[in-house]
Amino acid sequence: MDRKVIIFKLGNEEFACDIQHVERILGYVEPTKIPEAPYYVEGVINYQESILPIINLKRKFNMDYNESSDKKIIVVKSNQRTVGFLVDTVLEVSDIRNENIETAPDIVTASKNRYIQNMIKLSGRIILEINPDKILSKDDIDSLLN
Image (cartoon, rainbow, N blue to C red):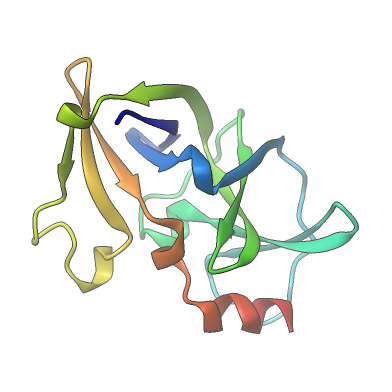
C-alpha cells in the first residue's frame, strides 16, 4: 500500500512525516517565549483555544540554525498530544510507493537519531522520514504543557 507524506525542508535537507500524524500546516506565528524552556522550544502559540508548544526541529536535530523567510508550523499529534514543528518550508504532499521506502540503517537510527524511521527515494533524492512520537517523549511534552 502506498503512503502519503508531507515533505519539508530544514536547511538543505529534506524530511518527511506521514500525513496521518499531521493535523494542519500553519503560517509562521511568533511564539510567546517560555523562560527556562529547553533550547529547542521556540515557545507557545494559541491554537484552537489551547496552548500549542512550538518545537524548532533544526535546533532539536542539532542542525545549523539560520532564519528562513518561508517558515511554517506543522501541527502534529505526538504521543497523544498536539505540538507544532517549526520548519524552514513545506515543499509538497506526496504519495510514496512502498518500493521507494527503506528502513533506515542502524547507524542512522542510533540513540540520538531514533526519530528517523525510514529513508524515501524520490526522483533521485533521499528524504528522511521522521516519527513524531520519537522526537519528544510523552514526559517532554507533558512538562512543556504543565
